[in-house]
Each structure stands twice: as C-alpha cells, then as structure tokens.
Amino acid sequence: MSDPSRPVQGPARTIGVTPADLDEAAAILVGGGLVAMPTETVYGLAADATNGRAIAAIYTAKGRPAFNPLISHVASVAMAETCGEITPLSRALIERFWPGPLTLVVRRLADCPVSELATAGLPSIALRMPRHAAALGLIERVGRPLAAPSANRSESLSPTTARHVADSLGDRIGLILDGGPCEAGIESTIIALDGSGPVLLRPGAIARTEIESVAGALASPEAKAGLLAPGMMRRHYAPDATLRLNARDVREGEAFLAFGPPPIGVTPSLNLSDRGDIEEAAANLFAMLRRLDLQFGAIAVAEIPHRGVGEGINDRLHKGAAKKYLDGV
Ligand code: TXA
Ligand code: MG
Image (tube, rainbow, N blue to C red; front, side, top):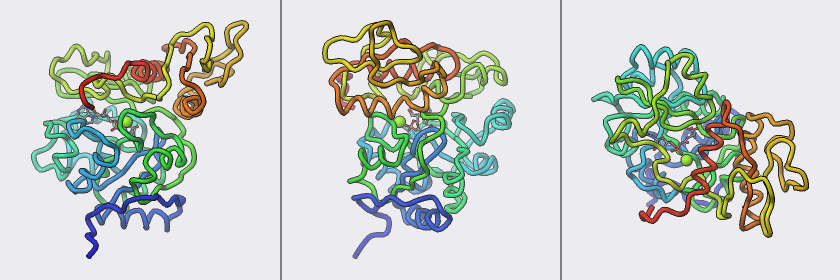
C-alpha cells in the first residue's frame, strides 16, 4: 500500500501557478510531500514545516546536513506569531519589509508548531513572508508554515528558474511550480534578533543600508560566538568550475563574467549587467554561473562593487570560490 506521508519521487512534473495548480500542490504538501515553488528570491523546496517526516525528506532530497536549519515561510504576521517571539524591533522590520526578502531569526516559542527538525533543535526559528503571489497562495492553502530551503542540491548554485530546479532535483521530487524567473535572483537577507542587537547573518536581496535605516547598525556574526550562522559552511553556492574573483584579465581556458564595461581587450563570455546595474546583476548571477559552468572549467569574475545588493553578490561569489571544505558535508 502506498504511504501518503512518503513524498512522491521524481521525475518531476512541472506545472504553472494557476489556482488549480496551487490546489494540486497544496494537496501534495498536506499529504507530506515536497513541492518546488517560486519565490521572489530563488526557487524553494517546500514541505509542511510541522511535519517531521516531510522535513526529513527535504534534507534527503538536497543531501543537506540535518544540523543546518530551514526557514519557515508564513503567509501572515499572525502565522509568524504562532512560531516565534516578535519583539518591537522585529515588528518594525516586518512592517517595513514583509512581504519580501527579509528573514528574521527570532526566539522560538515553546508551543511553536514547527518540527524541531526544521529548526535543527535550536532555540531560534527563521521566519520569512515571501511576496511572490504563488508562494503566498500555497502557504495560505496549506494553512501552516512551509519550510523551504533553496531548491538545489546542497552546496550547489541556487535555482532562479523552474528549469534549474528540474536539472538539480528533478529525479528526487514530484512537482515543480513554474512561476517564471525569480525577480531578485539572490536569497533573502537574514537578520538575527536575539535581544542583544541585530546581527546580519546573511547579506541578501535587501541591502544592509536599507535594513540599518530601520534597525540601526548591524553586527556581523563573527562578533557573536556560538551563533549558528547560515553559510558558515564555507563552501556554498558553488559551481563545479573554479572561480577567480576581481579579475581584470582572462586566462587560458577561462570564461569571463563581466559587470559593466569589460577591461580593455577582454571579450566577456557573459555580462551580469552591461549598464552596471547591481540589481540586474543579482538577478542574473546564478543563471549566468550555471551557463558558464556547463562550458568552462574556470570562470574569471570581474570586480563587483559592494554597494546595495553587491554585498550579497560578493558573499555568494566568495563562498563559491572557497575550496571544498573537508568536513564531510
Ligand atoms: O530567499 C531565501 O531565503 C530562500 C527562499 C526559498 O526563501 N531560502 C533559502 O533557504 O535561501 P536556505 O535553506 O538555502 O538558506 C537559509 C539559511 C541557512 O543557511 C540556515 O543556516 C539559516 O538560513 N537558518 C535557518 N534557521 C536558522 C536559525 N534558527 N538560526 C540561524 N540560521 C538559520
Ligand atoms: Mg541554499
């Protein structure tokens, strides 16, 4: 007999984001299955956050270490309030940035319905209300928070199209919702609010300066010993090709990924943004790295300015360039 709490295995079917498509996806999630969904940042691999077996299936499909916790996605502030402690500072950030690409790590409530596997046994929980209509519609239909890491195999490039998801996880999941290319292209900004001042755990789609205009200066995670920070695993967001950063020339066998006008004499293989628009570059980052990764063993990347979402782009590039970390993950 088939077990309804066992996720459907691939090959994945890709459907759209019509109300009927969302109904179908919600039924799979309620039954404990996995669905890849679009968000405004990257595609997520969603499961009912309150179902421990479904969460375990996410870790298996991604090949992700179970000590790396997941973000719980909510469709309302009220839903967030059933999971975590919303302090006045959290509320101010929520009012300004939700729905949108801001994840808040807050104290987990004692009666939080989310599986402890999703929060990796931590006393905190990561909460985000996405602004993509399909993601919101899906959470509303299920009526519970959805845990969703980026829908790629652990350590590899995050997906910004349904095709990327199919390429990476198509043989491991049953259903992909195709909502077109993601608007932001890099993941949410993650802020920890544990009472002693806000900490920037992961730079992302909302620039540090925007968050600081509401929250004041953000500390860096290194300042907080013992805090489990995302991407503390050094290699993350990595293509198979070697990355050489801040490149001003192109060497034998390399692709050149430009930003703005290329150095004299260099013909770019691809350009993150011809006109030097940092947000356009973020939206193109993962898709262009994927394309070059298919053809080249090495990618030289032009210097990317640190302004705005440039901090997030540089974070992804540095993690992608790190040599594989011999810690078994
Ligand atoms: O834009 C995004 O955030 C996307 C979309 C799908 O929403 N999601 C995403 O999830 O990037 P993921 O799992 O790839 O990255 C979430 C990061 C992980 O690195 C994890 O370590 C961190 O959030 N995280 C989750 N819960 C945490 C917690 N309680 N404390 C500290 N870090 C946490
Ligand atoms: Mg990820």
